[in-house]
Length: 76
Length: 356
Image 1: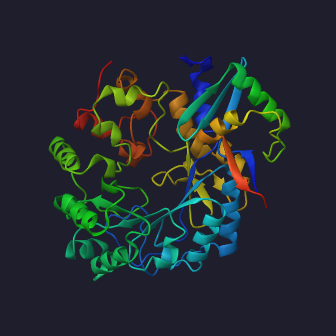
Image 2: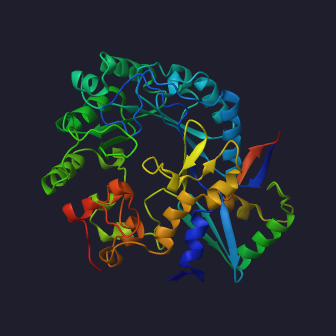
């Protein structure tokens, strides 16, 4: 079983309802619905980055994984 | 300048919020004595190196910091007792591990835990042996590369001096045939403040040299070349390279995405800037996040970008966003301790400036 978490290597800030993530020399901007989904994810995130994804569309999570914003790690 | 409503300064600071890689010098001990060594590593010197468990603590701190790539540099890593154990530990912790070695030891024990092994090879046969001051070094490195060929990415670093410059392409062809090289990095030596004085061997940086060097690089498949010390800004002339993506970042890793950790845990932004002025703290005894955020060496490199402390001419160059006046160790002022507002001297010599 794998758990999903926000990568330790990602950095982000939010301004005027837009998120910008930075990883691997790339900036990724999220606005509109994507930014609101990100709000929901971060609200549920625990201090160590794990989060509960109930209600978050799988397509969106897969997008975040493809951008290395979210990573999957084996549960320990 | 803004992008999607974010200021340039905000995006730059976000990009260096966490480092991506760390270069770890487990030991300065070395069984070779390369004439140009930028760290003056050589046999017989005693260094107070950290214990394996102390390095494990450092590796865990780097993980917390967000680092994903660990580069074990040197000295010669295989002279450090516990090196194999540390490589396995780093891999278990999820790092991509890169190893630098002179190839005088077998790498079989670490290959399965390593993403890339970079061998330092400075010529063919007796040329390599002469430069490294070690008889049999070339046959040893060739043998040890053959042992791991096909099981791990293999790259070659070659430092170019008068003794080996003409062999640059021969070295590439020889080892590419032997093991299908991942990357080849032929790099003109820098006169490091912390290395051996090799004035007698160093190449004279002239227009003719740079022109010839570029021609030799062009004979190597571009996907296999790894350019170092900001030479990208001299080599590539196409303005599109410097303006894409929408927000290009500086080439130089200092203060942006890399930590250099000495054998005693001291942290610096760059191998060529290891004076008190650039000291960032000790990662074993200090807080890793604080070192990264407020280390004075890191901030000197960052401020150079934020304050645009570069020469007037560089301000109007198309290459500015990526180049940012090039490598600090290649400025005229490097030997005298200068840093800001200094141009990379290869730029003028190599006609690299592209006016906007």
